[in-house]
Image (cartoon, rainbow, N blue to C red):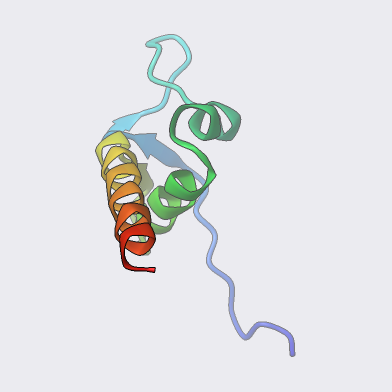
Length: 80
């Protein structure tokens, strides 16, 4: 089945600041994956927002996702 609707956001901000190469607060998907990993990057992008505001890629959310996933992995290994 074809999707009934689509959502598209044209802009992404980094830590609530407009991304700009001239100011140095700019991150590409490749850089995010190298820094945080694939799953934390996906988690952070999913958490970036569903409103009409610009999506906010928050590095604190990515860091927290790493911690949550590591903790969950340790718990699973311990309980299996």
